[in-house]
Image (tube, rainbow, N blue to C red):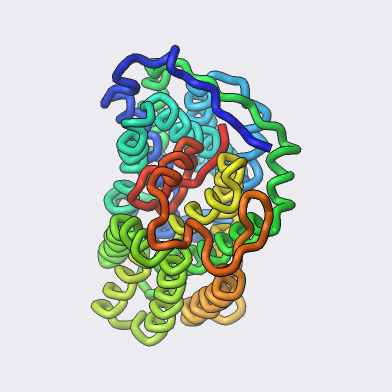
Length: 441
């Protein structure tokens, strides 16, 4: 079964999306990117204000991730025929309502409900921002358009999250959520100025049917295994490092993680081309496992911990692009759906990491979280190493050795084609298609 995208040539001008229109989409991804990580630096204050433990407060990340992972394909199926502008604007509206609910939350239950609503809004906006950029930019400009939109999420990791934590230290965690809400409102106000865009709908039966392919399922399981360890650590970073919520060094730590992630994102394309997708992935996961292990003794020394956080960010920045390359090759006829499922797998990995981090914190204490992350990354490395070399070709015949995506000359054209699917990724890669969670329209 092959899913084809209808042409939007009749709806776009010769120049496709203009710079300011891409800026609107990038502003949205920046806003949602800040929200995706900023709670990690605010957990102690949130826990104290809502009268819950830090581990319980950390499950807000789990709630967001599960809501996004489950809601993304459902929303995509139910709204397949809608104008993408309606989904962008509606998604931001739901997101800001969820954020306002969290900022006003008198209890943990209300906070959790607002977190779930914000996740559904984020799912509606993120995937469709990339869909619009990919479809309206045209083949010659698609890569640059996708890079421009993804720049918002990359910038949020480097600048937005540390800034959010700093605001939280000065004015309180609720003020941070109000700032994010205001940014979402400003972006939503500009969405009606974007061009009309439609894409062909895809049924839920087709989406779920892709999961019956063993090659696709193994890659998705690997994605979960790759994403969970970094989120396990980052979700509880303040308590792991023994830093108070008002400690200015925490901002520097998050900035180091963001800079490392940005560096990894910029290096991943060359690494995939030189070592293949599987080789790049093995390097990334092995580097994560080693970094977590080093953090066990280094977490109490500020300079050493800072260097390790930089390395964690860099290896994490390398980890998602290879997965998307591999999916595009093992399922080229349903690449849009497979990449969308990969987006859900990323958020399931986030939920698993946050949940395991909370359990570890309650049962064994904060000092054991780096060790747990190291063990989890090592298990992921073993999974990938034992299932990665052999793949299934599009006609489902087993081939020995690496697939096309794993070869030294992995196709840039295939990567750009995959990019039209769009999506969200807390861990972004440098190229347009590579650093986003792909959710179908």
